[in-house]
View 1 (spheres, rainbow, N blue to C red):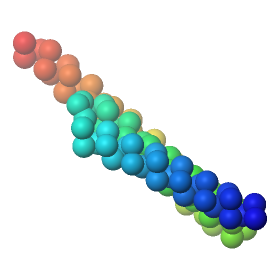
View 2: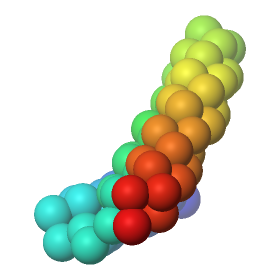
View 3: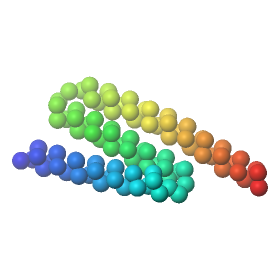
View 4: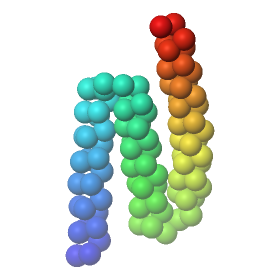
Length: 94
């Protein structure tokens, strides 16, 4: 019973967060909003990897979760630099 409840809760929370993140990617209005929405997708993927690790009792999913978190961190820092440089260039042009 608890496994069914936990699975249902995980699926519903994932759908809700991904639905809101999808809306934020489509609506924008800024690039920073879209980057944060992509981070939400990344956090949902890491959470699913952790849940899969707990459910299957295999540690290989923990390695995948760590890899996703590292790649997501580097990507977020890269996008933040691009957005920051674009803002600086826009200010310099005015």
